[in-house]
Each structure stands twice: as C-alpha cells, then as structure tokens.
Image 1 (tube, helix red, strand yellow):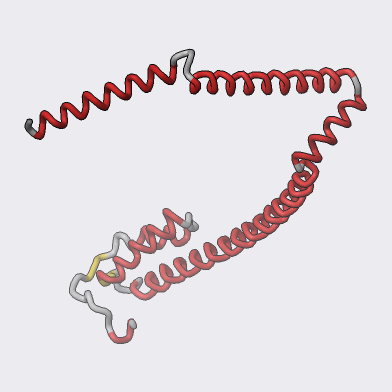
Image 2 (image 1 turned 180 degrees about the vertical axis):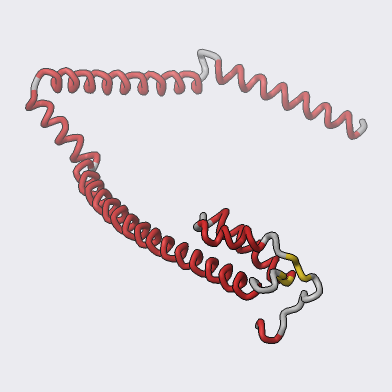
Amino acid sequence: ISHQEALFLLKVIFLYFAWHFFVFCTAEHSEFYLLWRATLEIIKNIAAILGGVLSAASVAALISVKAREIISAVIRKYSGSAEATVNTAEIKALLEQHLREDKEFKDGIAVMNEINIEFMKTQCRNTIKLIFYKYNDTKVIPLYEKKTLMTIEELYINKLHGNSFAALLLEEMSHWEVDYESGNLAENDV
C-alpha cells in the first residue's frame, strides 16, 4: 500500500466516523440532543419571565407616578446612574473651563499675530524705503538688491497686503536698470 493510498483510507475512515457522530448527536433519541433541547427550553422560559416582568413594570410606570419613581430609583441604584450624573457634571465643568482657557489662549495668539504682522509690514516698508533712497540718485540697482526687492514685494504686497506708498516705490524701482556686475555684497553694505 502506498503513502497516498494510506492517506486516502485515513480520510475515508475519519469521514465515516464524523458522519456517524453527527447523526448520533442529532438523533432525537440521543442524550446530547435531549440535553440541548432542555437547555433551549430553560433559556426560552427565562426570556418569557423577563419579558413578563418588564411588561408589568412598563404598565405600572405608565399608570402610577409613584411606581415610576420606585422603578427609576431601583434602576439608578443598580446601574450607577446617580454616580454617572455626578461624573457628567464634573466633566461638563472641566470642559467649560477648558473652553474658556482655550478661548483666552486663542485671543492671545490672535493679538500676537496682529503685532507680528504689523512688525513685518514695518520691516518690509523700511527695507523698501532704504533701498529706494540708497539707489535713487543713479537709478541703477545691484542684482542682489533686485532679488531682495522681488522677495519683499511678494511678501509685502501679496501676502501682507501692504499699503500703496511702498507699492509705488517698488513700481518705480522695477523700471531701474539692474547692475549684474556688482553681484557680491560690498564691504560697507554688510
């Protein structure tokens, strides 16, 4: 007998016993089947009793205010509802405090942001003005100063929405000649 034939025989024997075990367990005369049916009957009876108790409690709660109070007290006692109410109140107070602190923090950030924006606008305006008056006589601007002006223009005009005075200076300097030979900073410019 070969190895494959032996494996096939083992599979057939296993399936044979598995089938007979299944038939035995599901047959109406087996002990397993009778135990299973008894368990299901017990679960069904418990569910019916609980349903009846809950129905009676619902009817009593609908009819009588006193019964409703008693039922809600029992539910609170066993469910920890009173404790949950206290915890909810504490959580609400903490949340409200956190919201107040968060609003104060955001307001402080907004004020600091406005101060920083005004400072940057002033710095950009001053740099534009210094470059303008430095090269106004010759109307020739070095390449590095031109690149600086282009960067400042993008920041000041497009992002910070600066005023028209600096925009006029930038517009005038855009027509000036660019000196490509003085690409390095001079000693007195540093």
